Amino acid sequence: MKSLNRVGLAALSLALSTSVAFAATEVTWWHAMGGELGEKLEEIVAGYNASQSDYVVTPVYKGSYAETMTAAIAAFRAGEQPEIVQVFEVGTGTMMAAKGAVYPVYQLMADMGADFDPSGFLPTVVGYYTDTEGNMLSMPFNSSTPIMYYNKDVFAAAGLDPEQPPKTWEELEAFSHKIMESGAADCGFTSGWISWAQLENFSAWHNQPIGTLENGFGGLDTEFVVNGPLQVKHWDNLKTWQDEGVFSYGGPGGGADAPAKFYTGECAIYMNSSASRAGVLANAEGFEVGFGMLPHYEEVEPQNSIIGGATLWVLQGADEAQYKGVADFFSYLSSPEVQADWHQFSGYLPITQAAYELGQSRGYYEANPGSDVAIKQMTLNAPTENSKGLRFGNYVQVRDVIDQEFQALLTGDKTAQQALDDLVTRGNQMLRDFQAANQ
Image (cartoon, rainbow, N blue to C red):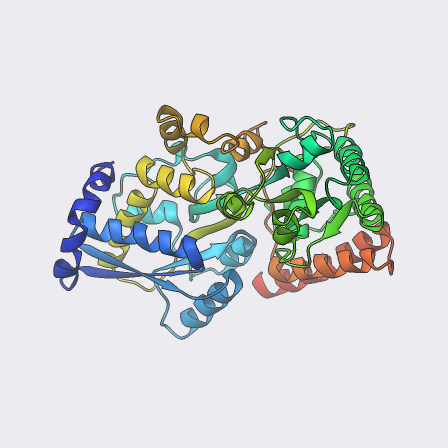
């Protein structure tokens, strides 16, 4: 790729970027990354702008994922849309149904004559964002998967091997009781993102379906089936463990209270995004952090986990020069150097095999133990119909229902079976509403 050579030149030419920007074609990118990730994103864009003089990409922070997606839809209706918008994975079904609004990435790259090889991307990443013919609809950017973090010092204090995280839920339960009984910590584990980690990824990891028709990939008339025996068993256990103090609920959505429970040593184990790695290491002061794959129940061999995060969608309505700029920028973004840098800084998965191999050749994973857990977990087995991802309309709203039903379980208002049955009923109504509006 021609972009490979630019990466090394980016830093040297950064100072020249402002002098040539006024003559270049402008491309606007709406994104949802604040804080340190947002600063890193702007650094990447600055590197691209400095590497050439034909295009200037302008990143614009639009708030949360949901706010960014909502703003983009409103802007498109008003004819004021950006060329690129970052959309989280649960918005994929909605974006695919927005016929006439999206310029599929595979088509864009072909039309613009860009150097683009879809086979170089990790199948477990791009599979989430392809159509039924395998064509990439959006450009992967920040993809992650939930993993296990654990407190090695607490493990040692409780008489557990600090180099051996629990592999199964049965082990995790036993370890947690030992930790609590020893006084090394007050609770066994907590979790961010109940919907993502303890239902969607739990199902994929155990090769259980989330919905019919290949988890929604096969059509809009899909239905939820997350009330199967294993999902019911797990939610029932989470309720029992919450009552016993083994599990400590971190709250709805991303689970805002979960990180502090781990950082302070209250809970010995924490499950959340692999992209939380930098934050975990920065905040876990006073103890050593270990990393492990998600646990599985003994009766089921683990399959592979699924991704979260977001991709970059291209919107219709721009001119050809701008689309050429988008294609050129995407080539730069997917180059091994840029991807390896982004992956190693953030903890997001490398989206290409070349970026992963670059990290290996440079000794990154040896120097940073545990940094490849997410990759090994994602690629443990070839994805099945149950583990390649999910694609449901109105899924942003469905996730709110998942949180509501889980909270009804924890308060004792419903059993696990009742909560998951009601989740299926309410979720299926949302699917039918989406189907009626998009057929």
